[in-house]
Image (cartoon, rainbow, N blue to C red):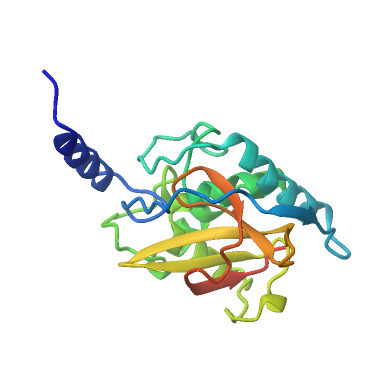
Length: 219
């Protein structure tokens, strides 16, 4: 039996609502991407080995992660991950942090276990869940704030440096997160953001495309 295109879309939408993910159970897709801009790279001044590894991993993901899947997945702990060719916006951070020697899955799970009351509870969970907690943007924001890594979210490009982490409100209660890269668009000279908003991990000039609700500098 063949289902009509409209029914297929309806089933797909219901399935997406049934599972957690980076953008709180909603997939936000952009218009077809424009051709990638000409870019150059800058070397952050006095970059630590951790920051260098962090940025290199983020850039490498743009060549590997070509899909987006917000499905709830049972992960090993620690060091668990979904297949590298897919994931959500938060997985970009998790993978880059691991290359820098920090396992956010473990760090956030341990912090939530010891300070459960300070973390968001909008998903109805009664206890920490090492499969998904580190993949939720509000939890990442809370963790960075508790580590005193928060900076003001301004509209001045000069306040954002390679390796910074930015969180946005996409509207409708949907959060998003990405990494300020060391890749610069030409001729605009804008630092590109490495993120996955629905079409795989990309480096794009989108810093001020949405309302900034978080700005963090970990390294």
